[in-house]
Amino acid sequence: MGIMLLGFMAVGFAIVYRVMRDAPPPTIAASVIVPAGSEVLSSLTVDGTIQVTYRAGGAVMLAVFDSKTGELRQSTEIATQ
Image (cartoon, rainbow, N blue to C red; front, top):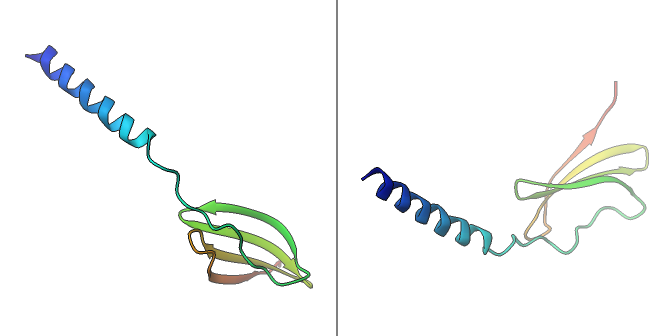
């Protein structure tokens, strides 16, 4: 009985693995827009967002964009003390 249960579990894991492996990659926006003349310091994708840190004039800004549409969600100035 135990061996049969292990066999069913192995088949179940194999099916789940195949389905997850063959899933298409998530869509990511082709581009995002930061103000003209700004210098991009870093960018990364996290939890469905594209986060861009850039320097505009003397301010350092963090812009959070939706990764599917490229639409700006939030913008925050990063200050130093």
